[in-house]
Length: 277
Image (cartoon, rainbow, N blue to C red; front, side, top):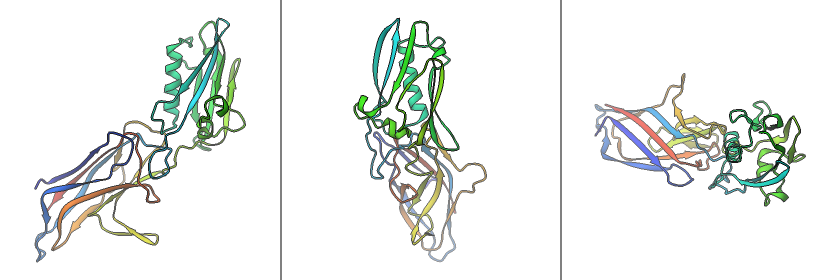
């Protein structure tokens, strides 16, 4: 058997990364204890495209429609916009990329590199910030309006996801900034993915037990790239197999901190072990 063992999972639809690998030949240690084996976690890579709106059993398909209105040479243009489907995430990046695409399509900006509308998040309060700058609009473009009012957007959930209650209709002549009433609903799955492995040592957690391989920190603001483990300063676990051990399969589960299956928009997991005797 190879001295490197890998678990590789790629999903073709939103969901989890649970699965197992069957070894080419069983991992065995000598009954009399003269031959022991150690599995060391070399690396864990997980998809950064995490689902931020979920009921813990699967993604919730949300309606995140909003409405952009502006005048071009005095003529009113109403443009309903639906966030990319399936819309299981609400992040600054996704929202801003959708806005940028519309502004580029209709040539609404004076300078394509200087946005007129942006969604950001206050890192302290976790509340949403929406700002508009009418001075960045192209000549002839006036009266820009962002409308996330549910009654005007087919009962869209975007206003509640972004935490806006008092104001859901945004327009300005110059520059203006609005802050949401409540924190953005971004981190419903928690800040960590628990990577559970059938061959990891049992540890106590509250009133139960868990075979925890690693707790990998995730960021709901990432929504891109890969999440890598271990990071600087973290010592990965080493699994020692003592006398009489026989392992034919290794099972993996990826869970939220409260034990529910972790959900990804694009599931991907790659776990690499180094095996020594």
